[in-house]
Length: 281
Length: 278
Image (cartoon, rainbow over the protein chains, first blue to last red):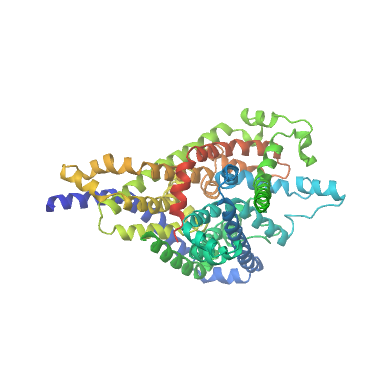
């Protein structure tokens, strides 16, 4: 290759890379640095630690992540075992099953919200008709509100993770199962000795990625309970917005996010390593 | 006997999955065809199904829907712009990184991957401030650029994996024939990458159409907001007309669902392969 050629390629390479670099500097590096400066005021942290809402929010966030992420991925693991069966009707069902993920979450979350309304909702009307008793106040209590947030979150994201784990299952060599059959293994044994070891690594990656993504789930909380009643169902994603835009305390709002960094950064680094390893097989 | 048992068990699980998936969608549909007088009945099926709520939406016949068509257009405009700009930025960047092997390309793709792992909600406040400094607040460009920022890292990551797999000999042969990098990009790279570009374009389009948080922070005038924000506005009062809201929601959900199913073929293979690798 002639040197002139090389420099032409290098020039074009730079030209092609510039749009993303400009975007990255202007709308990632700049806001992140700006955020770190806004979050550098020690007074904000004093304010946070003395606000009971903040401590409750930390507990909520941990509960939400622990419950929603694990149940969602465990169900996805089980359901991927269902969708792996080759039947025409299961293929059709998978088309319907993907709906929650394919359609926008705003209308469906608002639909949940109305359905769960204690006085007029379809669910409590049904409960009243069947038992002649009033149903629970689904969204007007901290723990059942959080529970419903988990349900909505799982409903929305279960299809996506099921697809991922299904792809993982389909990648397991068939002869592993055939030789297990020859050895007379039961279904449970096949799961224990063939499926699970092959999927373990993917399952852990999914858990990490889903934890990071769920940490930023704003819609499931904001649109279902609005963080209420009395700020008892806020998570870190919604609390920062509440401080900054609901109470005009911009710096405190940013600080709620900064508080999550000691947990988030190690997760991020771990995840980056895993994803980059997968990149070059 | 054993076979019948297996099939019955599969059928049972299938029915449970179907019910679980359809409950909120069924509820949304039923509420949207329930006449306003029955709003608070909580019935499983309205005694007198009606299209009056959809009529209200189409005719902009409610205070909350005064600018419905305008807002639908805004959603479409933002989504299409995000789709086009994300594709342009990600296709050029991955071509430079993967095919031209530009110096520093690895660093850029690593930074993009790290950006993909930042939850967008965590960047909301500084992004809002920065858009104010750029003077873009309350314009649709603030939303478009923000969504491009969040769509392009994933786009770069997925496209790069596909680009790395294209045979390098093709570029070599074209170079020997005297093709410039720009010609290689246009005549070889883009056509070969078409399937994954379709997947990524759909991803960016849906991401932007579905966005609520940033749309609601960055836009404020009734004529500028997207339909997603307009739906959220219904919640500001207690006596919100929920049937009309559900009808609006159904109209809002239809275009992305249609786009998704039209390109499902590309989406499933393109995105699940890229999303997680063990």
